[in-house]
Image 1 (tube, rainbow, N blue to C red):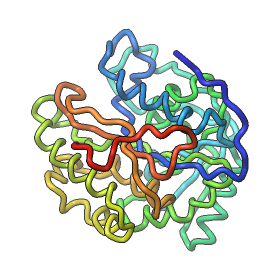
Image 2: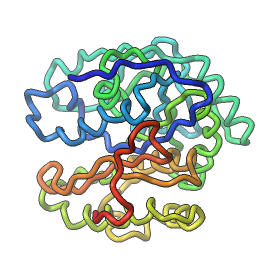
Image 3: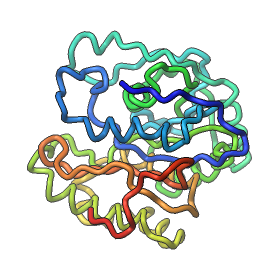
Image 4: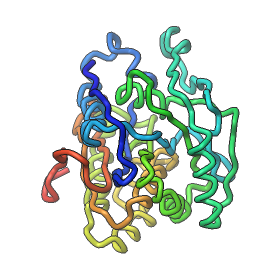
Length: 293
């Protein structure tokens, strides 16, 4: 695996935010088993450090679709444990260690920002990395040399609450913290493969048009009412894997979107995408606004 030599990030740099489709299970640790199925997704994740100009963030804050609480909760451990929240995979995948340090200081800053915004927030010193975090982060930073912490989504999946979460987190972008919403643009485990193509394509086209909308107010309204989109409840019977998008967008609410990953036949037929909000720090990898989904 090619690893970019990371430089320290200037505190004056404004980082973009990301919503990533993180794939299924512990795929980054199963290369011989998955073949080339994840090549495009892996390439998109490998490219994120390059889009940051080869700079090393102070920390990566992941809003994971695999962690939900009654109120927003941030991981505060200096050495987070592991959570193997998947079933039926090879034995070695239950012994994975992604030993990136946590960041109690950034956790405290997250709590400060949310409290200032009037959003209830608590710290959790026991929570570990779930696969919505350690699987994509292993592709991005395989040496586990960048501090990582997670922030939960909130039960009820209110889009406006998660947009507000992102707005509260926005100052972190100037403080060297990379904000990633980790989920999937299509998440219906009962309808995968070729049977998912039509619904995932319809929803993906709507999502691309919506996040690419130039007017921030219009984009916000479209995403708040995402369940009115074509095939919305087929694509997301439960929206835990879509809601992290709202946090990533809210933190860069007035900035343009860029589709940084897209496949038309993932897992035999699923249409999936990932997005960046805000400018890259190096030559952008971005489809044009007129690209078709």
